[in-house]
Length: 126
View (cartoon, rainbow, N blue to C red):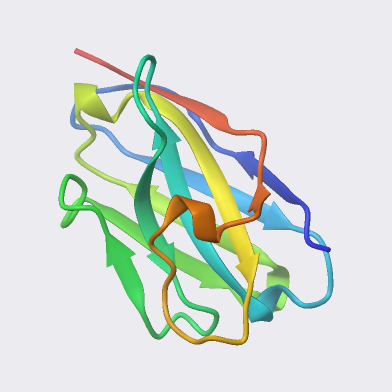
């Protein structure tokens, strides 16, 4: 079973960039659909971006389209979230999520993922 560890969070000024990384253990990483979620204080956890097993398909929440990019490196069991033009409202704890599935395509429902990392804090300041 894959275990997930996020890194790369921190404090950044509005307009800046951060790259989040998610390291996955296990031998079958290429069979996992992956997603990045975020949860701000007092809000529901929401999907930010998702990527299919082979990276053919990606999904972005409207709030991050054109600013964030999800990509993966199956050879090294990594998935990344490149975040550019950060805004104050991007402040949240960001979670990496995974689901082993033989179904190709992205998963967009929170309930579809059953493996989660511990989260990494992203804080955007003015």
